[in-house]
Length: 536
Image (cartoon, rainbow, N blue to C red):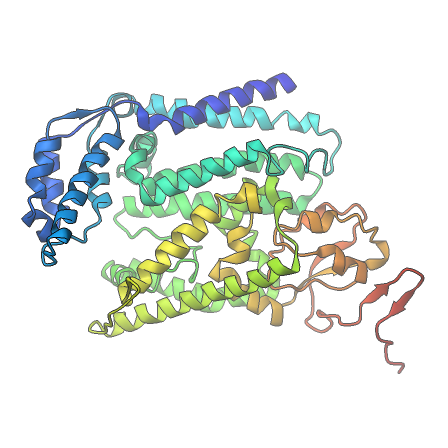
């Protein structure tokens, strides 16, 4: 079995390496007609007036380059050189404020040649195929190697991969690097995007993009790591069903259905993605796009509002945040599969809890402010304000862009997933997700969900606190026999799954008695009640 694991690891690393270094394979030949169309469509009048069309045409048209970095360097260096001269001469009316990355991506995207264009399915197999096969071969033998059913803690805090060792640091660097390229420099992963072009055309009828690549990777990673979850938690039916649920909602509702909608000329729409996690839902562009789509668009608009204002709080009342965070949400699904090996790294300190409260509710306030501005702009198109504070553009579109950059990209992507091997698997869910903050307020004050504890059976092993991905010191509650009703709890149930004495139980009961302020205090010499019950 160990031999199969080692062979699987080699195959996985081979597929991952080919995928990682694909950007340096093949060539890029810039077609003159494509280049002309892209430049005419994407360059601003100022850029055209400064001669960039002629400069780029001479430097790029009909030429072949070894990698995307050469093309990108030519585009950015010429742009910056002209701008620097204009600034030095104080020709402010000619200074350009474009984003060269937008047309850089389109030029490079239209230029690849070689294996990634001529043999897409071969490259798909050499990247995704080998990675998936190798990952499954590495994981499946654990069914026998783990031995009898139950949780194994061996090496958790000694492993180089699970305790911020060298493997964990390399994984951290790879994830952060990939997210930075995905969000900000997609022109350098064009070959990787082409590996899934055949899948994209078969599903939506369109060529692949960086977002299709990400969605496909997301589903593949969750599927392979779900197999690991099934093996590790096979003694716990709740974990098996929960893993199946998040996998289904991610693959069906966040990946397949939205692309099939596009294939049938309907708007791309994720029916499970509620505001404010879907922070673009109430923007003028999104609302107008749905309205222009006719009946299906009106239904999507109605469903999004219903999901946010009615379904989410009602479901939280009956079942707690777990119905979404641990059973439906794609972010939670990735955290529970890919992130499971890192759940013990979450910080349980009081300081971390204080930071968490300020951060997550601050993001919620930011989301509400941004959405309110966007709604005013939708109903009053002439609404506008413009301020410049320390070089920062404060305007309706500026606020939205700031939210998208800081929260939608940096926090949820680069930090939220990239930092799994360093800070644990629920950094985003715990510290930044505005939907989690919204549901947490409902769960804390108006919900039937709680985790009950049996303090008399607790042996203070600490497994529950160790594996709480949300940084809750579960043992502290268990020792007191006190219900856990924390707003941050996502009801993943792992604390219960790793408890050797069955102390913890996830329940949906009546609100009365849910918050029990009369816990059992276990001292050194005796057991006493913090408050005696009334004698009737």
